[in-house]
Image (cartoon, rainbow, N blue to C red; front, side, top):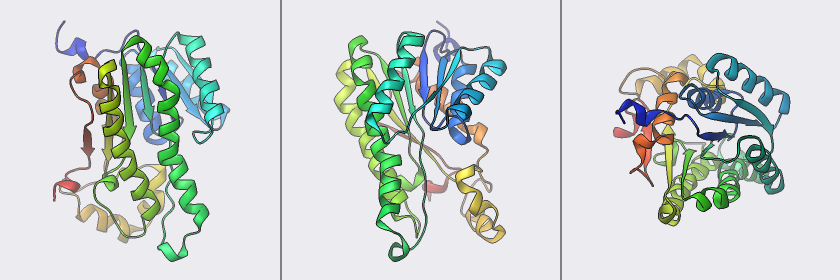
Length: 256
């Protein structure tokens, strides 16, 4: 097998939460372009099916759209069963779905905290729990949790988000240890400032966007397509000896 062959994903089945747009869409398309069959999930079934259809047309890989709320265990389990019925298994799980609610702590509601923690931390925990028996039975699996550089460092007015991503980074390490005997790799990708929907409010404010840019050693925001190759790497046999790691894609932000 050549070096490049180890990056190929033919015969693998992936599910990407929050895969209809943003970095999730990039991840789903990257996995499909490497040959994987991909289930694209979103709460809105039409959005999931539309994204899956467009990805299939672009990559020629088999895709399907599925709908579930990552905070509801019964919906997750039902959706995962449908993916297994369609493709036979699940080899790769990308926990990407998440939200951000910014604000000074005294101005945030308890419901804001609950919403962010539920989507960003409870959701991946539930999805990992749902896929555990599938991956453990065959002693193979790749789990990629989309954390954030704010799981390592932080910024003001990010108490719910940074707490959720810090927790997700430690969830990654804990599951990597728990599942290592079963040949399951669990890693986290930690993006920095990327020009995605979740950051539109920052991008639309020239002063705020410039402040962020000034702190990025590479001098620019990340292009979402730059996430795809790293997703493929961690999902492939090229990363077979990597588990419990956090890979920062942040233009050097956290190196300071």
